[in-house]
Amino acid sequence: MSDRLVTACVIVIGNEILSGRTQDVNIAFLGERLNELGVRLMEARVIPDIEDTIVATVNQVRARFAYVFTTGGIGPTHDDITAASIAKAFGVPLTEHPEARAILDAHYPPGELTEARLRMARTPEGAALIENPVSKAPGFQMDNVFVMAGIPAIMQAMFESLSHRLVGGTPLKSRSVTIYLPESRMAPSLAALQDRYPDVEIGSYPFSREGRFGARLVLRSTEEPRLAAAGTELEAALRELGGEPTWD
Amino acid sequence: MSDRLVTACVIVIGNEILSGRTQDVNIAFLGERLNELGVRLMEARVIPDIEDTIVATVNQVRARFAYVFTTGGIGPTHDDITAASIAKAFGVPLTEHPEARAILDAHYPPGELTEARLRMARTPEGAALIENPVSKAPGFQMDNVFVMAGIPAIMQAMFESLSHRLVGGTPLKSRSVTIYLPESRMAPSLAALQDRYPDVEIGSYPFSREGRFGARLVLRSTEEPRLAAAGTELEAALRELGGEPTWD
Image (tube, rainbow over all chains, first blue to last red; front, side, top):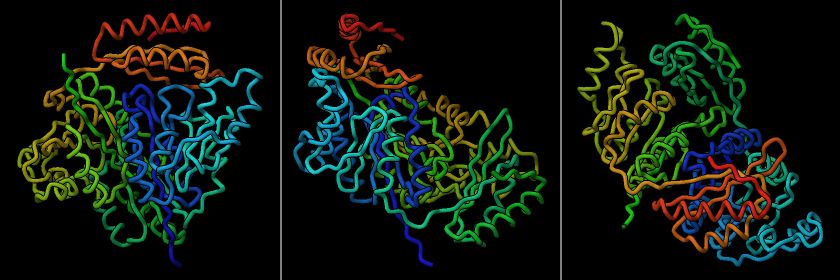
């Protein structure tokens, strides 16, 4: 069986994330949901609201990954420059999208579709809309680039609206176990297990909780039987070291 | 007065962040602390534990930003490949660092400094150590690249150990206000204010809380008097729109 790897990159656009003022949660959401759809998140970038940076970043990553998802910067205010920047990246004009206009027309009471709100109907020429069931103003897709809002609840709803457009590859299955043993004590066993299972990716992610050090060990593979076999061996190795493995 | 902009990039290394399994909090911490030191976080990248990717990313960003900070992948297990990758990026061998070795020698009881733990004494040739007051195994600095642990408590302690090595520029001061008004109603006033204050960066970051939409408006400038003047005008504009601004 040959595996097909379908890759993705997320671009989080927003000074507020880089200043530390706002904690991003969109990367984690997209990483998890994409994996369920057989798409592997290979990189995420957080960049400021600067047109040249958005253009350069989008053009760099859209050539390199199967799918690109952006979050942030598509609202009605002067600092929302994502749509204009994406148009520039694709070398097309930014125009009023008739369907987006119709959605806003239907949403706002007569006379309330102001110039600021109309900004949210502008997309790069040729864009396909992404439905926004939460607050109406849509996202859009240009080729393999999906442009979504930054507010997590809206971004998540937009992602569910567009998910049927994605063609995933072989999904990566995983098993994970929490163990309160120092990583350095487990390291030789983990390295030996990794040598015996080159087709299972074995990761060790240390943490400290309430003053105790432990690790989450994660096994990942496209092959369920290999995952099961590696899991059984890992369980035995951890017990031999005196640990009490707790599988998720 | 001329402003000096000192830039930084953060590289978060770890499959666990990209899979959505672990929520990154290091970017936000570094964004905030760097700004206090007069260093502007301009970009953050989350990349997987893949040597070629780490090498390429480090070499791309260390040429472009004044400082680079990496988090993750410097522990004792087989998947901790950051030190080896940084050595490769700089084209130098990975060697046992005598000071790092001495720190581990002093920390572990006789006979417990295993081969796995000794991995944590290896740095690229020529590296300067970064002290780790939490769990001893040090980080290291190569030129403008600072290599730190991924566990937030350890990373934060390492950052405080190294912060005196950073030379900051003109710090960006900020004022921020929370307002429950739709962004689209405030947009014209914000755009007009931005036009009058080109030297003050005005950002609007929408949110939804308990079903209500609002925004945090942030004014940023290196010039305190301009910030104060823009703040006074913003307050008046928001009250005129019927809002109740709450300044942080």
